[in-house]
Length: 271
DNA sequence: CTCCTGTCCTGCCGGC
DNA sequence: TGCCGGCAGGACAGGA
Image 1: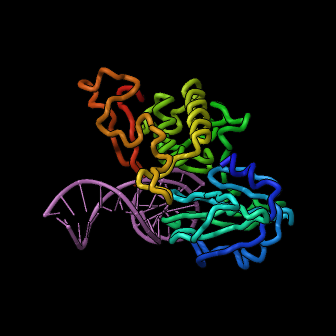
Image 2 (image 1 turned 180 degrees about the horizontal axis):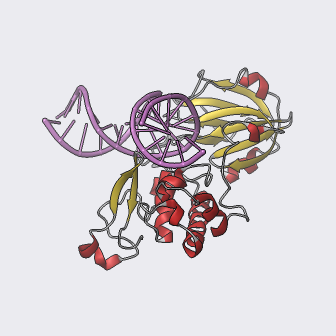
Image 3 (image 1 turned 120 degrees about the horizontal axis):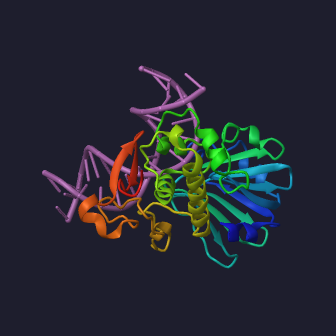
């Protein structure tokens, strides 16, 4: 994504094809007309949203949902829109940027650069784990008084921004904390470990280009990023990587459901 | 207010 | 072999 952003920065949008009316929500009114002729000035990220700043003072906001992708096609590539290609931006140099999302869980917004933070998608978001001020102290403060499980608390975007179901399981594993533990009991050194684990897991995920569903395949039939392997997620019954030889004692990685979502953890390693 | 459940959408997978 | 129910993800609404 970062490489893609660098290639688009400074580029001018020549033409926009919007191929349906909505995803989870309707596309912004007159989106193509409002994008055509605009320059991408810079790209940023907040939580799971991509922010593409334009030269007219607006920001194009993209959320890829779970199966969504942005695909960059060089000018010489021949292109025929596929079923789930919803937005096709043709740049002035002929490069195409295609927003494709088979499950239509994605989101596209067009907001003023001066006030995008006020939009409901952003106004209650908690801290960015990769910012300098995110540490064990800040995390413990956010968890104070929370009677829900630490798993549920980390899924709450008001407490920490940008974690989803997969990375919550992974971060709790790295920190050695049980997903069933009450959120308010995560304090002190334990909170510090968790904050660091969240940072590590997120940084690695971003470096790897994110994850995707195991069933996702791209246009050429290649498997998606799900080959990026997880320590516990999706590994019910397998040996815990932290207590390798103990599977006969522990039963390996366990799967439970919390707030309607699967959680994977090792009851031996995570307390 | 907090917590938790159901909904949206599609494609894959397992079971019959 | 083919069909179909169940499941997965993130955001959000609404109920307890």
